[in-house]
Length: 142
Image 1 (cartoon, rainbow, N blue to C red):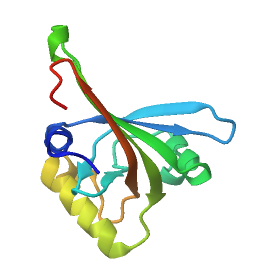
Image 2 (image 1 turned 30 degrees about the horizontal axis):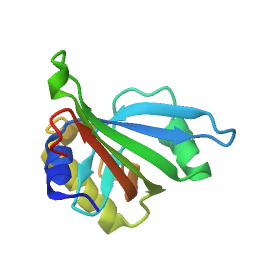
Image 3 (image 1 turned 135 degrees about the vertical axis):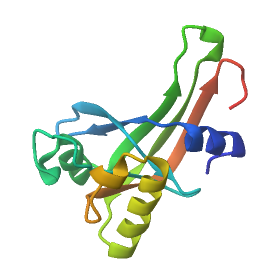
């Protein structure tokens, strides 16, 4: 679904913002680390201190109640000729397959060395299936 320029952009980026909506249509956005496997995106709940257990986190409760999400990968610069973003609108689900979870955790660890110690093998993993991709670049190359 992503074109080659968008794929390169999201593969190189280090952080995204995941937006979810609760049952009352109240939005919630958090920064996330992620990987893209040329078809779908994965993000996980790591061991950094959290206010709640994984299953009680707002983003998890929201996507269970309403799986429509937006993943925003952007680049900001004070030089506004360098601004860009890729917005992925999709459907999020919790990964239940141990083999899929294992592949996602391995890919996340390969991208982020911090996950060698902060991401458990049995971490909660979210898969985002893109349904629509919108991108923009001040240089027009996305």
